[in-house]
Image 1 (cartoon, rainbow, N blue to C red):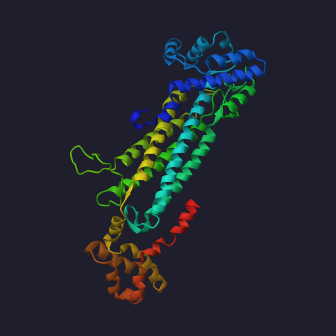
Image 2 (image 1 turned 60 degrees about the vertical axis):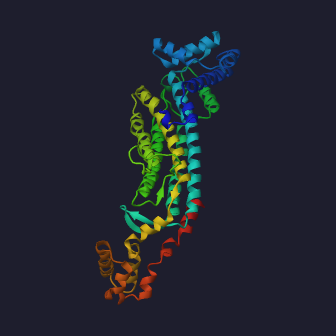
Image 3 (image 1 turned 30 degrees about the horizontal axis):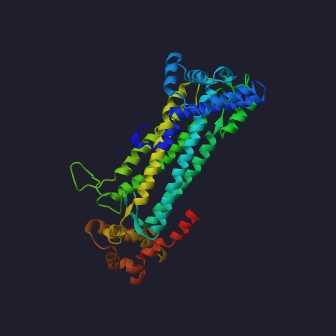
Length: 433
């Protein structure tokens, strides 16, 4: 986790102190259940909460113990015993390390997901506001990077809203997928701990009991979770890339906000670069980087191994922290995005009416010409615009084969921009309801 690309609320979830606090809560809730079942004294369970419920664990001391034991959970339990005293012998009854580690990891992922969902809501709100602001701002749509037909900038943003709404729904599903708890002991058979303990801990931690945990929670859950984060990152990159293209000097239809005092280049004082969206493109790669290792973690040996552990210690914090930062940054970009409608119109007119070629093609077919002949007539006039800088409308009006089928008024009518935006309201109603 690099501070430059981190937000404190998210990084706190992954701090050692937060992790040890969750470990303690898992152990203490398990003791409560064990006490209710008569396995350990109720007074002992109470003492554990009383003595350690509000303490700040000594991370350095735990590290010191682990340097000897070479086992992080044992190091924590030893430190907890130093705090609790004799009743600490009742902690971890019938449990195994994975019960603590896996349940904690999922608690952290759930907490992280809740923050990501907040970030998603903020982004959706920004996209909706700007989409309505530019609902009728006509711009050129492009395919292959080449002028295609007119659309509106609002429709572009509505598309992004719909995409991120799907991302939000996927993230909600991923949260449910990952929100499971395992307190099932060695190889997951509950031989030394009652399944009711797991049910109690799961409820207390806001999780569901894992149906079958073979000492570890199955990693297909985590694979799906990190794949979902990867898809969200790809959607962030898609919108960031669109803005980067629109900010190119020869396009300049939209631009990242350039604040007073900001500098674009150490060498060229005139530069205003799309640094935020370029940064988002890079951050998306980091989030996606976790998807393949998460999928490779699914195939563990027999009931368990720890080949997944080192991976998850890295991709859990890195992916969620990075995605949280990226969502916040993209939201800021959208909120402050500079939009240039005049440049949009100027760019659309750059090739003097070519964007209306399909309408002319369809009109000729409806007038009785074959599609092949219609395409030939329209294309030969369009090529004069490309190659000689001619005006498309003027060339069509001067083409006797075209005017033999269409009147001047019929041809001119095909150059009405409003034709292309007549269903914008329908699109918006589908996206925003």
